[in-house]
Image (cartoon, rainbow, N blue to C red; front, side, top):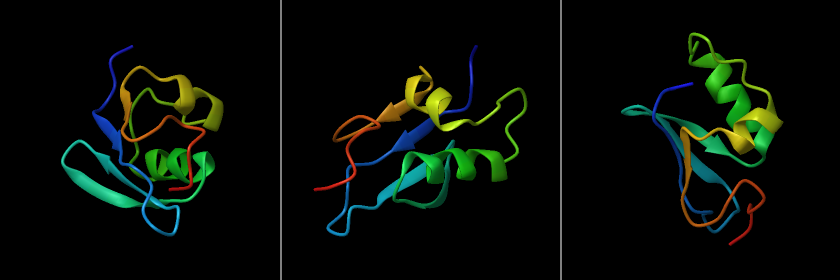
Length: 72
């Protein structure tokens, strides 16, 4: 399934990771659940944002570490 362009940036000093959906910054995530919630709030059609699905979604680009990296 093709989805939106989602980028999760490398962890900041406090462990938070910036999240962008398409061209919009949607928040700082501190857990995988936060990323899923940002996607739910963005109202993405055809996307059921469960944390385990977000971790393996091919349309989520994880920069500076995968979905299990939350500390700098």
